[in-house]
Image 1: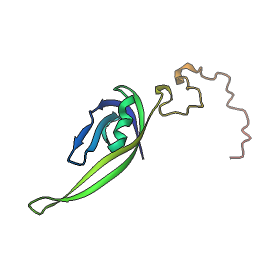
Image 2: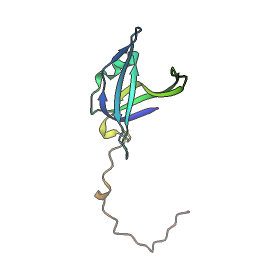
Image 3: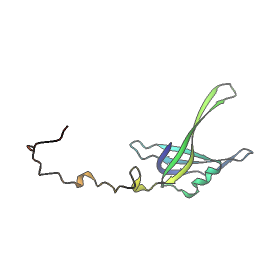
Image 4: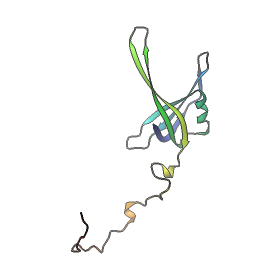
Length: 127
């Protein structure tokens, strides 16, 4: 799965526990009708992948969804989800959402309406 959008925030690398577990978070804002602020975590050696990125860049992040079960001291079972990134790449803003092989489409209002239409022409299309 992938998440694509503009980098809103990149956190510092955090280290936890005696075994040195490392985690770093990035927030990407999607560019759609209702933009979403998606937090993705990179862990262990993948935290270094964020070193070359900064706020404002358009990126595509390859992700895995993770879920886990936890039983609290009162015996209640809780479930947690996380979004874990494993690859990140820069996306050119001009090509975001489009094909890099096609030129950008001019706005619709730059086309002149056809004026030479003859409604009495016979339509020989088979459908």
